[in-house]
Image 1: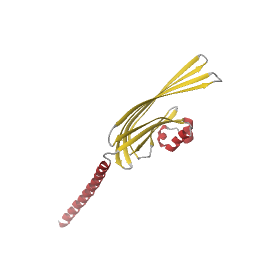
Image 2: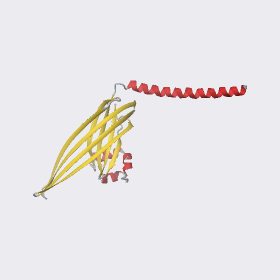
Image 3: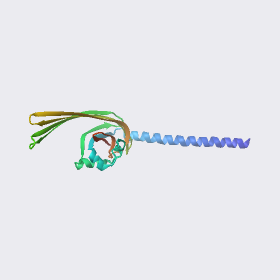
Image 4: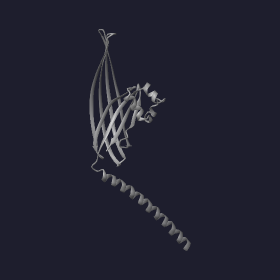
Length: 212
C-alpha cells in the first residue's frame, strides 16, 4: 500500500511539474507580447511596395530557370542590378504608406506617361501612352524590434497604348496587364524582399519593405 501511495505521489508530482513549466512558458510568451505592445504602442511604420519588370532574356542571365514557382527565390540584388545597369529591368511603380502599429492604411494612385519616338530615315514614328493605377492596403503589427507582421493587398493595372505611324497610315495597339498580390508575412526592418512574382511575356516582381 505504501509503495502504491509513493508511486501515486510521484506521478502527481511529475504532473504538477509539467503543468508549472508549461504555465511558466505561457506566462513568458504573454509577457514578451505585452512588452512589445507597450514598447511600440505609439510607433509608426513605413511600408513600401515596388513593382519591377524584367525581360525574360535578362532573367535567363540571372537564373537558368524560368519556373514561376522559383521566381520568389531569385536574389533581390540581382533583380535590382538589372534596373541600375539598365539591362532589361524597369521599375513600373512605387508606393509608400506610413501607418500606426496594428492600424490600417490604404492608398490609390494613378500615373500617366507618354513617350514619342521618331525614325527620320524610315519616316515612321511611335507614340506610347502608359497609364498605371495602383491600389495598396496594409495592416502592420510589430512583433519585436526586428520583426514586423504585415497583412497587405496590392493591385496594379497598366494600360499601354502604342500608336505606329508610317506616311499617311496609322496603327494602334492596346495592352492591359493586371498584377495582384495579397498575403500576410513577417518582414525585417530595412530588409526588403520579393513577396510576389509572375511570368508571362516578362517577369513581374512585387518587392515589399518595412521600417520603424
